[in-house]
Length: 264
Image 1: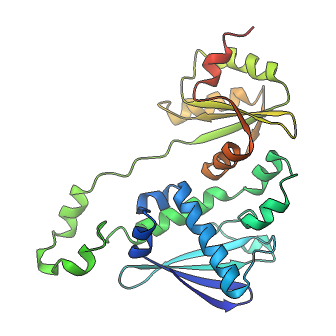
Image 2: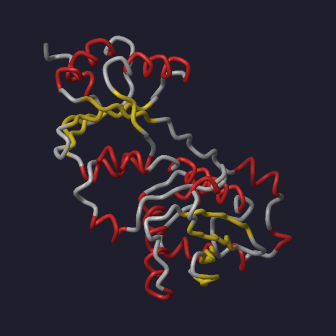
Image 3: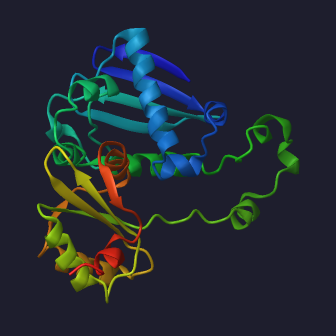
């Protein structure tokens, strides 16, 4: 992984497929924002801070993914003073890990609000995956396989398994547990997707996560609209869920609604 300092507000990171292989990171994990993908981003920021003193300084970060010749992807990372400069290709991030450690006193819901736009980061990662999708998954094939022996691109595309889709996840906050119980009784007959209940001890707040599961999008949206009568919708997504798992107490996993229906 090569990192260059462009100026005080911008760095450039070049990633090769070897970089991904060394970290046991697949393209699909980049696309869907796995823990390894987030760890890679943190590693990039830590290396930039160590080599060039480049820190986020609590500013939004604008990220542009650019495919290059061969097997590389270039990430241009820029600190932005004015968030209005960000368009749909870019995303805002929370502070670097060192800054997060200093801000542990802040509530979980405040952090969730800061993560507004995190899904755009996943869109950037999906763009990266698409940009290099023509490259073989096996890094050795880039140098060891003669061009004439490689299968045609159309055949390779047909043979490649489809990437699994990631079901949407919604988050709702509740000030009282009995409100979650009432909502569970209301939803139990119409919703059977994965759902988990967390508690934010700092704010004495309960947070319920709902995954779409096998529900059609129209049904899932209707269910979430109904649930908003009981709880407050919050910013959701893979990064938000990872934050909840790290900083909140998990009360009920996977089938919280179904379990809470046993309470009156």
